[in-house]
Image 1 (cartoon, rainbow, N blue to C red):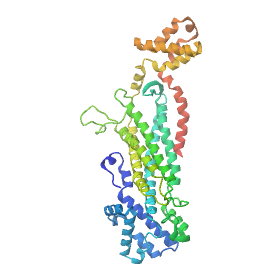
Image 2 (tube, helix red, strand yellow; image 1 turned 90 degrees about the vertical axis):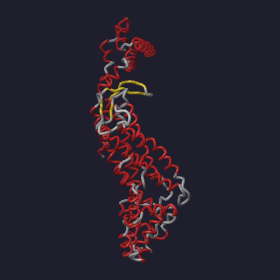
Image 3 (cartoon, helix red, strand yellow; image 1 turned 120 degrees about the vertical axis):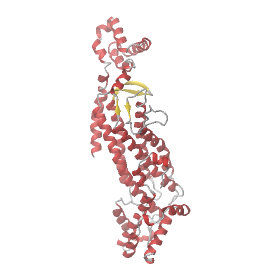
Amino acid sequence: MSVSIFDSFLTTSEMIAIFDDQAVVQAMLRFEQALAEAEAAEGVIPETAARAIASVCRAPLYDIPALIVAGRRAGALAIPLVKELQRTVALYSEEAATHVHWGSTSQDVLDTALVLLTREALKLIDAELLTLAQRLLALAGEHLDTPVLARTLMQPAQVTSLGFKFCGWAAPLVRSRAQLRTLAERALQLQLGGAVGTLAVLDDKGPAVAARMAEALGLKQADAAWHTQRDEWIRLGSEMAVLAGSLGKIATDLSLMAQGEIAELAEPSGNGRGGSSAMPHKRNPVSSMIALAAAQRAPQQAAGLLASMAQQHERGLGNWQAELAEWPALFLGVHGALRALNDAFAGLGIDTTRMLRNIHTLQGLVFAESASIALARVIGRPRAHTLLEQLARQTVSDGAQLADVLVAAVQADTQLAQQLDIGILRALFDPVAATCPARRLAEPQLEKLRAALAD
């Protein structure tokens, strides 16, 4: 496939190379070579024919742009490729040329080729995914006691642990990695069914030929042709879209925390990274941008795959072809997003001082719930909640700190002053102490996630 300049901007050279036009054709020729060699081993075609076919199964021998143009007229790229393969074999042996593509069909060639390419694409995805998850877990371990604002509905809520937040970013990635491996075991299988999935031309040799081909290509042998049974395949593609969404979640949070007004995290800068053509002061979060672009496109790509499943009878008309065109885009986008986020987290700027400043700027209001619970033990929850609401309003009105306003209110109330320890009350407003609940949850989760990555 050719990739537009805009797609290239959002992915990696390595993933582009996997789905390059020549790579696709070479994967198709690998199928044809494996088919001929398996059939020769089973006595279906002569050994000499298999050798002749194998000798010309090299993509550089063929005019790939011409094949693509011819494929538009034929309805499938495999049709003109098989004709050219037959013509090329006939240059050496006309008899051998009659055995090219024996008993197979165009969908067998294309599906198996895409399976072979997807296997290589998944290796790239897995390597980047492992690196990103490991980096996040390492950061989580380092920052279990680092206070940072938790935000709900885009507003400051309470104080949490930065390590707990990093752990929450990593967990979906670890789960997706495990899912992709499980789904790939089922989906990366040989496609060989012949015209209508029955391998009729191969007669009773069909299963044996399929077994040899699967072994030669390192693929699972399918129970039967899956020409229009796309469930296992689409599950794999859907998980890739889920991964894109998880990467988008990380990129969303990172970009928000990198905003100048917040400035708690920052992507690496320098060497032209994240610059502006008009504003020299800008430090744009370009890694987040690339990941967000993948997350933006993935739902439509996944929808395209799902919509293609309602295929007609034994061979789809239009829907299978749409699936083929949609499939590589998911891998291109996800690998670009993974690489970009790995670049970001390899040199992530973490401003713990700014995190504390952002907490203190809120006048202690983010500790109101903890204070309310402490009061509730003495005066009951309804009264404590009402009192903290009043004190919070007073804090905002006076431009004071909630801790000071609360202590003054307690000291002014004889009953409360006798039952509440002022030192304990002030400790409720300690940002580092506020990270303890998050740390208690993060530590065992970290162990499980690290163990999952080690499998």
